[in-house]
Image 1 (cartoon, rainbow, N blue to C red):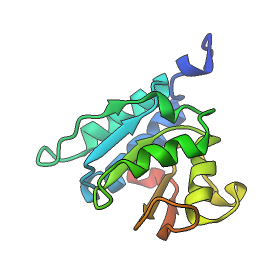
Image 2 (cartoon, one colour):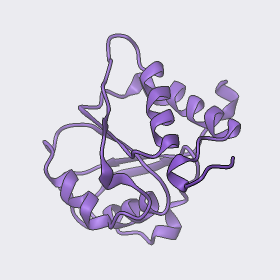
Image 3 (tube, helix red, strand yellow):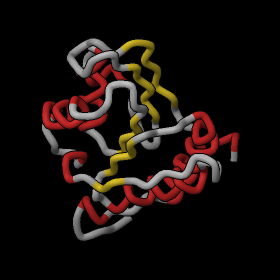
Image 4 (cartoon, one colour):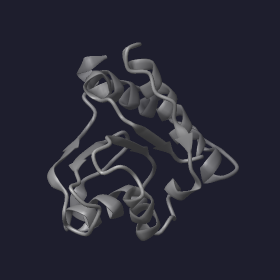
Length: 147
């Protein structure tokens, strides 16, 4: 879709379907204490889709933060994650290349090996926010058969 800037680019129709599939698949399994979202239009659309997918018993408000844009240095995100309660579940809604770089840093894998594409969900357990310490990490691609 055409937009004046990358920040203004909305989700494509396929992107909307992928986000909806992920939210339906994982929304009921999550209870994030923090939901931090990029200010970019497509990230805001993604956050609203997740809000709709969560059951009424698990509502969440998301916070728009300027440190989740595609060109943010990974260490800036790591610093922000380090400020949270370590037992709190967090949902980050952001963009490439930041997401692959962040997952690569936290898992100790090469960023290109993380296989993140539109609407992928990276599930990480972080006993401590540091390079290579993520446990039980999985990458979940959208399953459009759920729609």
